[in-house]
Image (cartoon, rainbow, N blue to C red):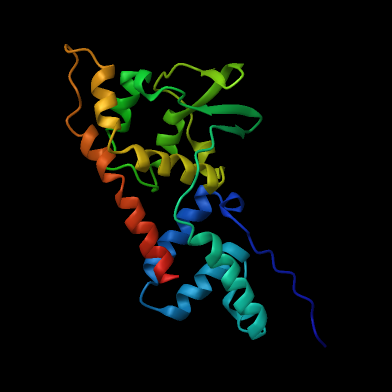
Length: 214
């Protein structure tokens, strides 16, 4: 007797949280030399299909699902999402990076590189803060305190995370000069900020490698 199987296939990164993405990425790295395991990992993390169930799917269905997954996973660029609602609170992306608190730059500079890893949710808590005022396209967010909560960013969808990441990648060449202008001559500039921002471009290589592997 045949059994019906319902398979939920995500269409884009809005269906994947940061937590799920990191687990997927780590497993893809772990099984990168085993093609069969890579496919099983992809279907397990994104569709919830166990390897035993995957083997029972007909070829046409398997191919269609894989093509659908590859379509959005291989996307090479992502737009910045300025506002996001998290647990009923509206957060806005730093509206003026040149006026961002010096302490925020210092805290970002503590990380070796700006890339989506186990520390990324902490970076997001610096870049996105609760909106306090809106007027047309203009808006203000809460001042940076250095004590912002970051755990909830782990459950925010990857379209938001990737949008912020690629925004930094696209600006990585001009941000160092913006930072210089925003600081006074008496303030010490963290020596590694420029290298961190420039190094963030490595994410493109990592993502591309993962896409080619898949």
